[in-house]
Image 1 (cartoon, rainbow, N blue to C red):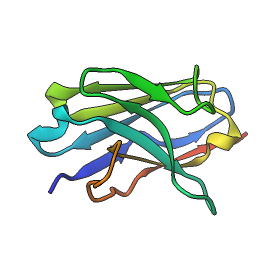
Image 2 (cartoon, rainbow, N blue to C red):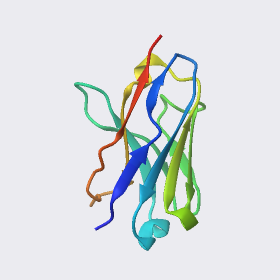
Image 3 (cartoon, one colour):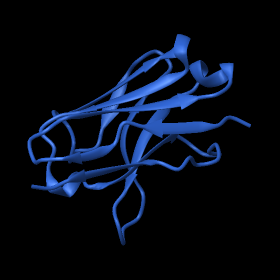
Image 4 (tube, rainbow, N blue to C red):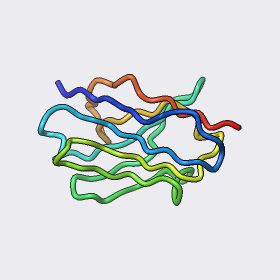
Amino acid sequence: QVQLVESGGGLVQPGGSLRLSCAASGSIFSIYSMAWYRQARGRQRELVADITSGGRTNYADSVKGRFTISRDNAKNTLYLQMNSLKPEDTAVYYCNLKLPPYYNWGQGTQVTVSS
């Protein structure tokens, strides 16, 4: 079973930047579309951005122009560059497949945007 480990979160002021990473065990990482999700307190998990095996990307309207998803298949790693962060971006961020059946969810990484 593939394991996903997210990292890179933290506390940042509005307008700041963070870069999240997701390390995936297993060599099959490269053939699937992957995605970043987030879950704010009291809300459902939502898809933030996704990327195909070939690098084509899609973004939720709320992050378009501010976030950039990328992947390094050689390193089995998924990234999310987040710029111009807003308080409403505060959430736990997770990575996983774009479509079910999903891998087991990791612990996620907390992003808090606050002054």
